[in-house]
Length: 104
Length: 104
DNA sequence: ACTTTGTATAAGAAAATAACTATATTATGA
DNA sequence: TCATAATATAGTTATTTTCTTATACAAAGT
Image 1: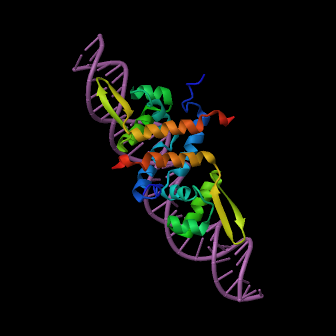
Image 2: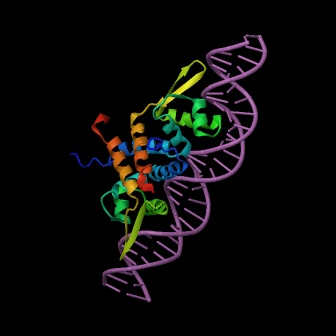
């Protein structure tokens, strides 16, 4: 009862696929990296990540719709942070896998 | 010189995104799960994963093109296995994140 | 009230994905 | 050689994604 735990359940596959799709875009992955430790306003994300304000806003909206990012208003600004802890773990894993010295 | 290791390099982002895109489809994720421990012929993958032969073949081809899966001929059959070790790690991570008891 | 700053939304075009059907290819076995 | 099994490819169509431009909305400052 512990080893058939292999993403075999349709439900798990769907959840995992949804998360992967959300991350599987360079801008969205960068956004998630930027939000890994900080809560940031949209324009700050635009600065760090690049692309246009509109484009980043749309990508943030995608992440929001998928319940991956959440945001709150602070006066003029909208502060964004990662909502789904699982995503944080995945981002960390991506770093562990893709940012190690064995890339050399 | 060790903490700016945050997927900040464009090159890492691209690699990570490529891997994520490859995994971000239910059939392909299932294929990778099926190949996690075994080297399997295409029809066996079709059986385990579902969908049509043609469809699975095309998805396998996508994974091959992206250097994630490799295959060799054994007589009549084409045996497939995961080529990129990084992908194996990611699949394991996905399982760790999405197949734990805290789903309850 | 007007302007500026920060953010979101709409509309549309271009490109990428995905799936299906049918057919081709390759190897084996009779 | 003919039939069959295993896999790949072609051609199409439908859907989804992505980006751009322009515009709307909201809050704050003057």
